[in-house]
Image (cartoon, rainbow, N blue to C red; front, side, top):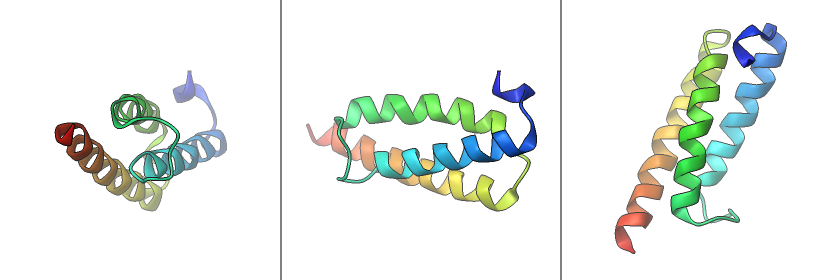
Length: 79
């Protein structure tokens, strides 16, 4: 569905995914690491459909995704 939206809507959606993906990898979250990991994997599907409009936002999303994923996997492994 998001693929068919205009560029402005896709930019807003990508920014939303950036924020939530970043927060998922911090201690300022409401859910456990496993739930957050599942969330960022779903968010990645959405973000990938919103990319190629802003290279800077694409890069920022990728950085936060990798960072959050690494943090969450580390937390899960420690349990």
